[in-house]
Length: 557
Image 1 (tube, rainbow, N blue to C red):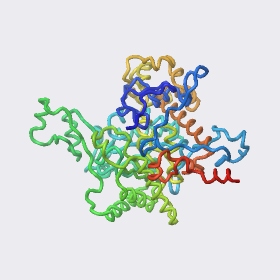
Image 2 (cartoon, rainbow, N blue to C red):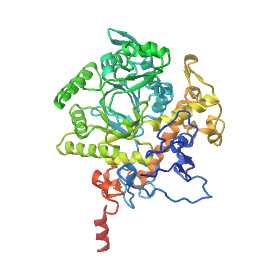
Image 3 (cartoon, one colour):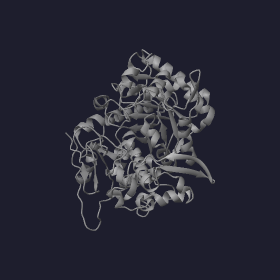
Image 4 (spheres, rainbow, N blue to C red):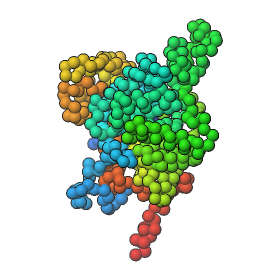
């Protein structure tokens, strides 16, 4: 069993719960007082790239565990000479080959590429209540940094205030809030992607969005996710809400419309209801029928006016992976997100999450192989994003290099939610639990902060007592939006900016060490396998075999 360390003395970090390969705890709490690496980096930023207590310490690597097949069993290859992908005008091998010159901007899309300042995106933040609570932090942070954010499935269906006519949505305040919060700070980088499942399609979500927002929205079809192989779930605790959802066509467990259920709830025998979504394509009995349905759906979305369409698939087997890559490529989709097992969830059956599906590295390695087959036949494979248990800058490097040149983004779920939680907790203490958003002197709305702390914990007080002291990225955000606008910026968004700065700087440093100065220059030669099993499963050479032939030439010359 891999002994993932629960604490890191070099960085001064610790996990409250059981750590995973991602460095995040198995159970990540919104009220956590620290201090895993992602949590602490959301305040101190790129400082956490280095050992603590400079001038008083030396540090040695403890990462000697390379057991099994996983991202931890890939290592990054450094180079002594060369410079690949330097921006135009830079050519000096000494003065220009420095990590700040590494360009980590990316883009994705077939005909009208979407630009992103950094090569990551959020996971799908849908109908789970934790996504709704912290949406302001997530969306504002994504817009300010310039990476895509995904509105997950079922947001319209669970919106209590949504208005339906003949089964089609006519007004959804919650979906509008999600979209408009991002668009307020959108500056041409990143995107807001809205995901659709079976219920969303029936509810007319695509039609509602295109009528109201036009081509500002990227629409995403959903086949699945890595956390579970059934539809999305939430838990509700009132009978009235459960009945509303059942009446809107969802599967409720137990069914509030069944005899005796209401009485059982009122007497306390039933205390909560689980709302489930349907499986996709359950009425199709062959992959040919699935393809036909898929292509028909894509054509329908294009006729509605959508310029950008994406697909999200989960950790199914090789047949479904090949279908996703082939069909998305043939349809000219802009992005395919491939979510491996080992990622996170808002609500999934736990043992299902632990035992189903293809682990991320195995799935991603096969995705590259299948995309390569299409490319070698002269076809253009769909741009891809890899997801599933990825959180740090080394994960980003490895995923992009493993899938190069087809992988354009790394999709991260909980890692980009943690700063939202943390910032909200700090804001709740320092500002109070409500934030009034003022535009041109007018009150636009009042947002709940959803802080969980009564006072700042020692791990935060050690950094300061004000947001300017606590968040290393505070003044960078202020420089971008202006002093007056800072009062409208959620602390969670500042924390997302600060964490993103750490991830960006760390990625730049790793790329500079590999002498790759743009993302387009990354390829699989930048990785080596730390054990033979990983070499066999990924096709990445074993660490001492890579360039061994060149080494022998040098020695025998």
